[in-house]
Amino acid sequence: MDSQLTSNLERLANLRGLTAKSTGVIVDVEIDYQAVIEFIDAQYDHLVGVYDEKVGVSDIIGEEEFRSVMLAALGKRVQWVRTKVNGVRDGATIRVDNHLPLPGPLFDLFYAFGRVDSTSNGTVYLPALPEILRVQLDLQVLRKYLQLHTRLKHYYSFSESLPSQVDGSWAYLIYAETVVNGTSTASPTNEARPADAYLAAAIRCARVVAGQSYNITYGILPFPEVIRASIFDAYAKGIGDAR
View 1 (cartoon, rainbow, N blue to C red):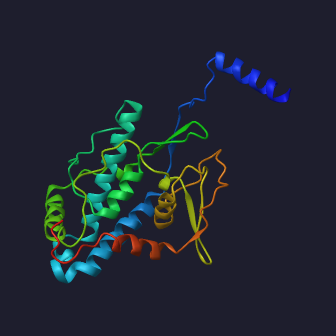
View 2: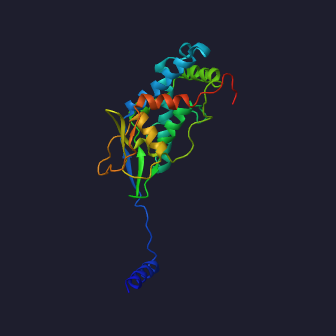
View 3: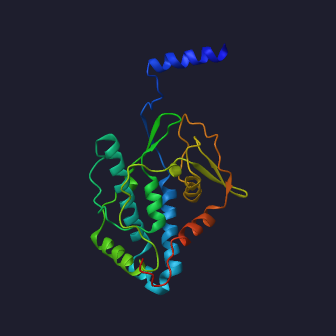
């Protein structure tokens, strides 16, 4: 009898064509971009530490110049994503060529800053676009960066362009903080991949979004410095490798 009642309810609901649909509510997510800058600076420091003797990284481009190129590229990425989703551009166009090559770890980082759809709560998350990302590139600095790419691409993996997908990842939404024995992670959903939590622990840029319950954890990960080093090392090539 109970199963008959259940099947009757399912039949009646199906006749009505009831299906779960996203509400499509868009949430602008405030991000600790200072933490992102620290990750960018750590990438530069890694390139200097490992490849300065081989290609003269610090002679070609300084840390602030490298940072300005990366912030402009990230600003371009976030502005493009927001324009695609909202149909309106946020302010003046951030002029960065879509084919700008990026160091592998920063390509992965910038890819994360896209549209994230939650099927569990029907929310669409978008990264905010603050003034710190509205960087207009100096052409001389850009030439220096492209010279670095030419010298370094045989030793270190670069992308061929900026991320070209609107979708991002949960890495900027997973809250991470340093605890006694490593990095604690907390997510508002179980939809994130382990890779998202790993990157989130490396950058620690997420801020708690109001109204969200952070009751999903990926456990205690290593300290950020350890994770960053493993990420940066993963993109090294063999000496003279032309791939």
